[in-house]
Length: 368
Image (cartoon, rainbow, N blue to C red; front, side, top):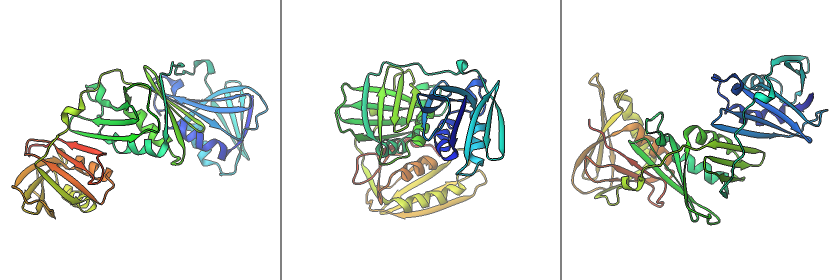
């Protein structure tokens, strides 16, 4: 077999696929990418058994109508990246090796039998809907950072996607903070459904959704989520579990509402955080008449203190929060001002934009 194409045609789809492939795999075949040419069309496939990405490659001038070869993904990507942008590339199978030539460069790579390459099996898709890549990526960007990492409550290690009528809602929590956001769908879906997408699956989808004007078709089965764009098919296994009732965590009324300049608050927190404890990252917020004082201490008995003017005129209060959680939420909000909602020192706070209900962030207090 022999495949001829340009570096420009190969590099972008290869970058999509190589991102899924881990450098170190328990199964060696999972560090390979499958090149398949069939009926004049070429695709690249990469998988880690949980996620699969299939990318179309254009501009192929292969001599063989049908051809397959599995090559080490990272090495192929590094070779392609190092070649000039306009380089012509030929890939030819030679025994147990694949020879890649470009100009005066020649690389002989190890291959594995194509029959050993794993696939995510075909599914019976129950739901299908279409949204803009911009809206779906924005939904993920507003929520993904609250997904837990390696929590024993395995269902928290993914993002909840809730499909209801003409609404797609995303919810993430690690038990200390929670993010909720939603987008409106053009058409109502057939039936309400909840799925939990693993953290890595969401991160990979965010990387692949790079065309703000493009559409993405979502397909759902019992155990998988599939996203199809122009030239890409992404499939992820779902987390098998029931997500907790997140609505019970949302404060439904708050006695103290502060309107704050978003960017000034973010910069203030970033400065105070310099002297917060590296382990606990706690800051104390002291609320008084038209003033919010933010203080941080560390084990070296160093202190940072800043003040922010506010429109609050109620009773004073002190409460502690993880400064990283607050900065993450404030950075994800895009409005000029934010609404900071509080009840008492033992209750969660909320962060939202004045003109929008979503995204909404809930953060548990911490004892200082």
